Amino acid sequence: MTAPTDKAYPPPESPTDLFISFTLLALQGFGGVVGVVQRELVEKKRWLTRDEFIEDWTVAQIMPGPNVINLSLIIGSRYFGLKGALAAMTGLLAAPLFIVLLLALIYAKFSSHAGVIGALKGMGAVAAGLIAATGIKLLPALKTNILGIGLAATLAVVCFVSIALLRWPLVYVLLVLGPLAVLLAYAKLARKPRP
Image 1 (tube, one colour):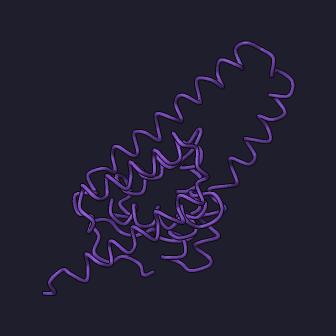
Image 2 (tube, rainbow, N blue to C red; image 1 turned 90 degrees about the vertical axis):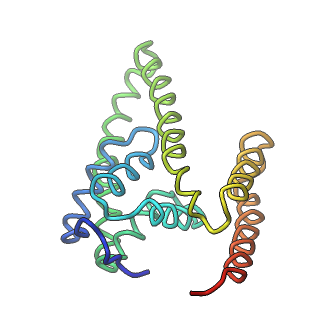
């Protein structure tokens, strides 16, 4: 992957910039940071376009391991190689690790308190809302997808039904739908007239 060059805003200035940016991203995310990552990297910093974010997010999802960690490695390595990848990943993990350890100590002492139980239920609802909001924000990118909005939406619905309703394992759904989408995109690209 190469660093994008045609941008309205400059890329990250240094690995330190990546570390600080991903640390701040991690501190904003509760129950998952993908919504925050999309807003910060695409809408505020403009290190990625919406289409680039979707492409990178897709790759991050099909790779083993946490999606956002994979995304931080992709973005970090794009600009500064291994040093950038490690800076972005460390920034994403360092502060939350410290906070989680601190909260684990507190939770062990107050886990049966009604306020703590209510707070955890509330955070779960917020996390679901963040994920839904991110998905809705990314929908306009389907307009320019090579598959077309109808076919892309069909694949999305099949994926949702398979995982959320039928409860099929994610890995099997990805192993079927991923190659199918790649083949369909390849066929459409092959039929597309060249300039």
